[in-house]
Image (cartoon, rainbow, N blue to C red):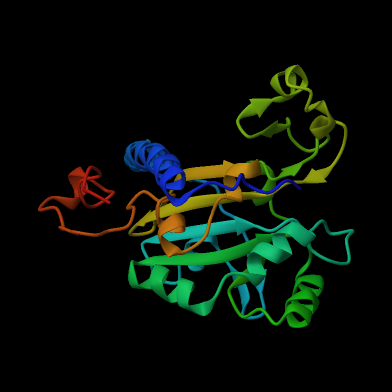
Length: 246
């Protein structure tokens, strides 16, 4: 691996200012993208899903734990595997309790969902020492409906918003060859007992996350800074004006 060029402090300052201009432009573009994400239309979910955890069986509404928003990390764990995906495992290892606390302060719950049976899930959780909510969707269509479990024998393959034909066009037809598990993050919003799907990201899009703000930027309500409750919530089920500054 080559190292950066060695220059004088004056030359470094010129290069650093050039990079700073690009960083500021990236920040402006990212803020605009986050605002567009908050304005993305949402879909009411009418299907019932059953999940299992150490506390028993739950529906999707239960995963909110009373919060208004829910972020689900789809952890790759095929029922035939003895362990979860190493990459997913590493990302969960890096989720501290403080991050979860900051999400919950902003009315947002975070949960893991995998397709493996509960017994395997719990064994793996204990080995890793994880305490954050983790649910088994084994026997449910949840993973297939949100396109992180791919199997042409079960449902038409779609990944990262590409059909099987489109995947073949970009040389990703290996995703259609047989059963596979893929990474992703999905966001949901609750209005009373109604649940809405607001956003999902896959592939590398699910890797570019760090602190609580990065997760909140994926949600319909955003960071909720300068929060102002609308006078008529029914007219705007997402709550605050989605154009507020981040």
